[in-house]
Image 1 (tube, helix red, strand yellow):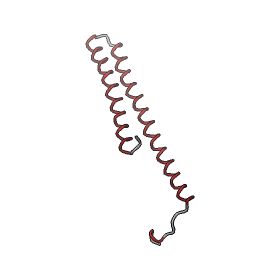
Image 2 (cartoon, one colour; image 1 turned 90 degrees about the horizontal axis):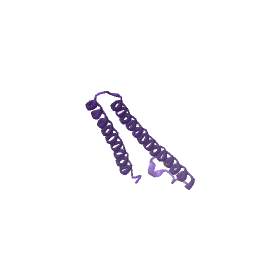
Image 3 (spheres, one colour; image 1 turned 90 degrees about the vertical axis):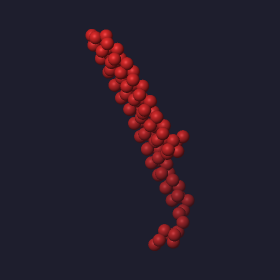
Image 4 (tube, helix red, strand yellow; image 1 turned 60 degrees about the horizontal axis):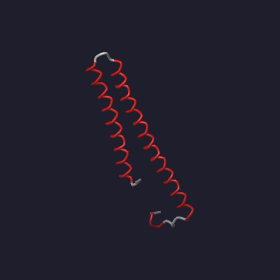
Length: 95
């Protein structure tokens, strides 16, 4: 039977469908936020690894380069991750 000839949904059917859609949306939102948190931890760990290497190395110039690279990796990685999460949330209408 074509869609325009079907009987209208009851209130219970509509409520069940909306509840399922809300659960799916909440699950997707939670996944995006947890993924962003995980990526932020990854970038911080990568930056700390560079900084640790800066203190471990014996050469002052190499140490300075590694330390600044650690700061740069951490800052750029975290900011990029947060910006991507913000733009995704904005495009989905979550904000």
